[in-house]
Image (cartoon, rainbow, N blue to C red; front, side):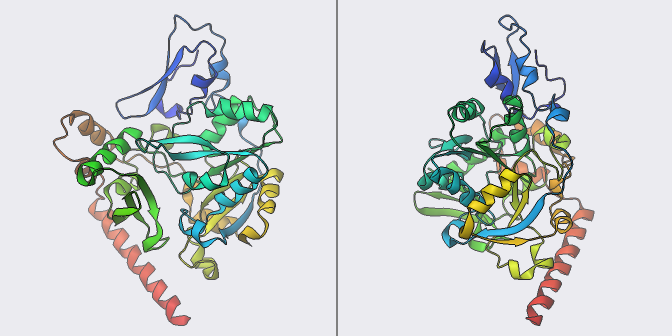
Length: 398
């Protein structure tokens, strides 16, 4: 039976939970809010299926051979879709191709009742907005791997999107059976924050403003590069704060409450299992200034013939330009490097666990432990000054 000896070696994909025919595996959250498998040894029959579908145990078998992906800068020509997406809105265009061919798309979206982030199935173009935009919290896969397998078995086209480890979990769950009707799309992932921290932060927001119907981690009202964290009630925006100033985004970007496996990611690298990798094309302006209007430019890495085909089916829906791989990776190092845990991570979770009576608001606890050292702050200020100077020189030359 599967055993989690080190939490760095479990990404919480729930493949083991889904495949267990005796239902003797449950997923239980630890004190940090991340779920891990727990086995009822009395009902386990030692079939070893949980070990066979674990992407971490089988990572050497499931990683693809070395190759050089095709690289593009792109965005959706539909301005509404583009502005409501985190980067260029290409994922929506890919999804529309699948759904218009009577297929199904899986991705991370908010639950209706409590805005919990979970993977869900979409088979109507009008519902694709539910999957649009970044969700900076670990998505609950649930039993979607089994749903995907059943749909593939009856011939449905399926596009499954997720983090690289979730894509690895799906392929491992399918025992590496190649389905011509399965398309996969991963992201360049910084890391996945704790659902428990997100839950506490939502509760904090509700105390301030009451009911919240939607949260946007990447609101572009202040631009793509200077995006904001915002939340709404109905059609009314209650609050918007630039990511540099928002407590939750600070903690996320400073690696304060990411899953332990994110510091030891088995799925980083240019070589990916997914057919397509999507990301923000950070640094696009320094090499391709004509491709940056601050509305969002997507970076695409195409890893397979199926990825090429799916992209070609988007046709005139997207603007597409060839780009340089080295430049793209240079400005998006999370593609190939795992994050280092914040030095205050253990202290943060210790205080969060002790603070059961919530003496201090979650935003104050995050702020306390996500402060940069004086040396780091000086370096950031210097870098920001150089960046502003470069932008001024570029604008003056236009």
